[in-house]
Image (cartoon, rainbow, N blue to C red; front, side, top):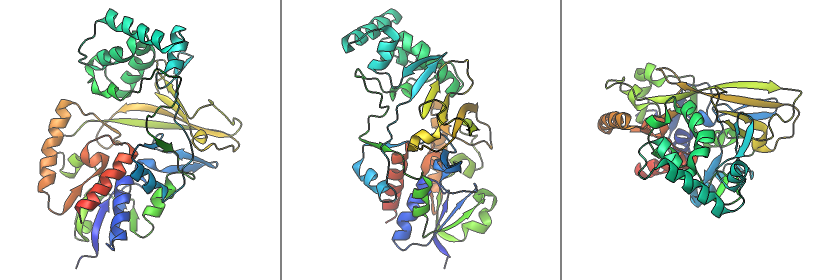
Length: 367
């Protein structure tokens, strides 16, 4: 008899949700992670009484009522609404693009005026069938907004000229003709009171956990411990990059701690949309939880080229990489008693609610 029913590689949202559900069914689970903490990228680090989102801002949002009920069983959420602002060379604009943005930029007042302005700029540029990100952006919001708030920010984010990026990247960008600064269109959103660690700790409370363990370097030791393995690491790394590596974008985070400033920027998220700054945004974490403590902590977020061994954040889902992923997926389908899941295992960008949903579907498939 094996000691465990499931070995779960990765203590992020996917692995933790799977472990929680399986342990509820009486299955014995061991969760391991190469990092020295649980939670994956939603992990919060406590600095001067402030929950700092160690791997970038995470704002929970969903329109799936069942998923909202699911996460609320672990923790109460506050009513934080994501309303980022953009700083372009000292000019401040509201995001997402809405009537506040259009009014500030063009001095217009009505939705009709804003639509007219965008239509004029679309015609001037002659975009009918957008083939790349630049054309798609101009067809959505016109040339002025593209040049000030999209072009340089996106080029920093992806490390490529907008003409060389696929159109679909910008399609999820909200554009609305009302005075509404709420970034998300979802019905439910907020931040867990006390941070995301509360959720993960409760999910893993009845599960064995070992941290600082690199599964691929300790495969022989761990593969015989359980009947089945859930692997949430990088799928190409699992197979030794035998077809070459999938491409990612990485991030670097620089924290600055201020004990004599209580409010650094007046907002949780400020995007810097010009090439004047190398970082794409500054996060001021205390605003996520309406924290009125003394001092503040900010994080500057720098997009980086990804190299083997770096943290992988955003999959580069262009045609070349998607074809390569399919080759790895076929290998994964043949792997006995191993389930691949999560962002790294599926080479797919997931919002948090979708990660949980996918984990619950994986649980169902195991029954």
